[in-house]
Length: 322
Image (tube, rainbow, N blue to C red; front, side, top):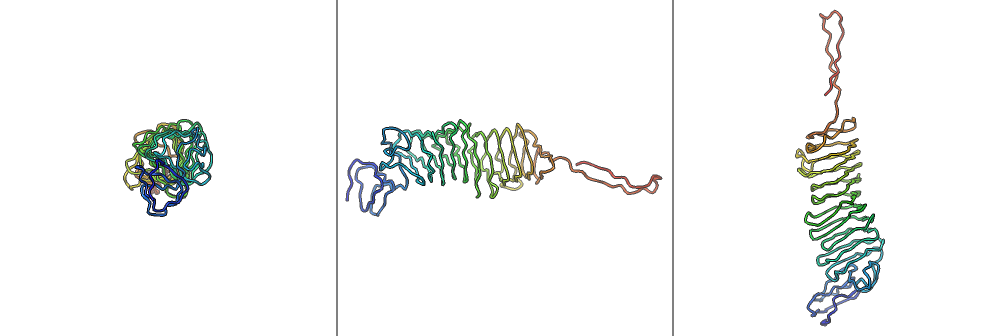
């Protein structure tokens, strides 16, 4: 069977031995590929086609097949339509992919909740004021533009990967790494508002330099890639272990503002680029290889034995500090 019509999209159909001769691939959303088909793109996701009278996410006609996504579905934006989208649906979905060829702007008026992840490879995603993202994976590729400028919380249970070639404004973004498995954080040398690491069950790796206003850790185990720099104004470290991903090779910490450091074990941290880190409350452990960290003084008692020529007799105890 040959297909020559100018149609570019179909949804929820089963195709077998169909040859698309129209000159461009046809996107099939949630279709069944029975084999023997040519020049079709089968996508297991709801694909934005912008066919509705408005740009609302929840308008059925804006999706291939004229059916709006529902709970647990996957969402896909690509060159099928570059029409802007207003994300006005608070439903929990599995994942969102903004693929190459989508050059429109997605603006959120509701929170985005995902069980798998979000990958932005093209176009623009702008979070509305106080609108948040809860996801596993958070990934911005080189072609992405992403804006989070107004009290936006981005909570991730998986990896955070921001390509250095992406165009971002994260001045209002507070990220939380709160998973239960191993997580990797790469902000691509970008500047964020804040990062909170609350993953207390698995290693969190910081693989690239970044800048923030606030860095908070609680009950975490953090490994920083050697020679990478965390630059932050304020720190609050509680019951956290910091190490270098390459033992005996320093990672860099630059702090210029307030500090709370309690129950911390740290090694191979060079803080010489900023203020000295005050870890002197007696609860912190120097794991070695640290620069410009103050772990306080440790009392050492030295006892001088009795001098038989000393008429007063007895022993002299000296309390030294180191």
